[in-house]
Length: 437
Ligand code: 5AD
Ligand code: SF4
View 1 (spheres, helix red, strand yellow):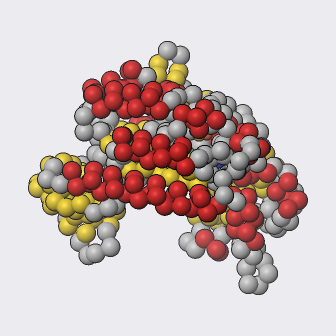
View 2 (spheres, rainbow, N blue to C red):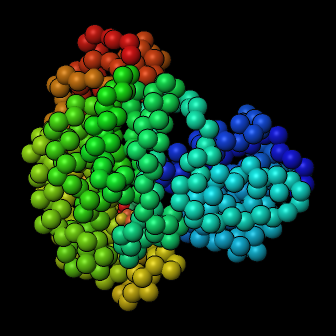
View 3 (cartoon, protein in one colour):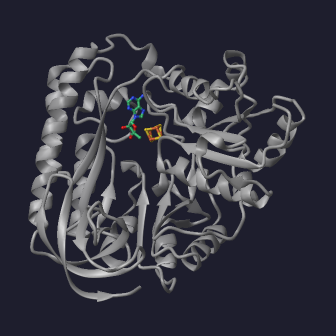
């Protein structure tokens, strides 16, 4: 692959931070004169923006690379990006001759340069972790979806024993106050009505003595910005100020994603989570005292090494106690290089499957109950996209529920409606009075 690419396609996997990075890489490549390919498979350059958090991530990435070979034997220039690139480094190009560029999540500012090098027949690798350098290189102008992501913090210093993030994204680092505010303005000017502040540990964001609550308060004064959310938070970083913000700032939506991972203190200790079930539940109580209608969501891992049936039952108990409005559950997956991967008593796959199913069922029960309890509420949704049926649009309630409704409103409009019925995964609404944003 030795000619300079004219078109590109970016495929992002995994978390919202990868989605954000993918959007910003697209802007960067467009700025350097490449055009987005109409059909991904026709692109001259394909960037695979990979995720390493669970299950056979690297194997999946290599098979994705293999599938980029075309019927006539040709292939695009291939950049392996994201957390698999960071974890595999030079090994990636040993395992696959098709990979031209390896670029880690903190090195995207060098992508145009790396593409130029690859065009000259070289096979560049950059898995440096220089912190905030990439943000400075991304173009300032933004085109934004009604609900736009804004990464404010990256990396993690918590070192939960199962997790690769501290190794793939590096140490905890916060973007400066002024940069975040400038980008938020650019997003709103570009059409965003809602901003979702992102970070692996977003509530650990800080600049000097300002924390996330101060940042949210500041952003709430931006005209045209209707809603603010943030994700993902760590229980140990839920400050009093942030909890209070939920009761004080109208634009801060009543939804909190606060992973607990397990309901067993023994397992939480083995996970090095730095919180207990008690401290977690107390935090939830405080958040609910500040904002009684808040929807709580979480993440769970089943089958962490040494997890017994009793530990698992404690997880079901905390699900009942917190009454999650939504939650994500995952089977434990040993990540190479993490402490948990070397622990004894790895749990049998069949047991994990069984626990995952039981946990899903329990979460689904609470999610449906939460959705049913919302029926009859008068609220506003932010219209995000078209629904499947003609004339139907899908918006989001303040509580993060997908709401289907018949309306002539367009994405970006805020619509007043009544929630009229509830399903397991979505709500239906009936518009009251339409108001364009
Ligand atoms: N195995 C399974 N799930 C994991 N997560 C992180 N690491 C692992 C792992 N090794 C889950 C956690 C985290 C979410 C983003 O992914 O629940 O909160
Ligand atoms: Fe991973 Fe734990 Fe950091 Fe979350 S807090 S990114 S689970 S190490």
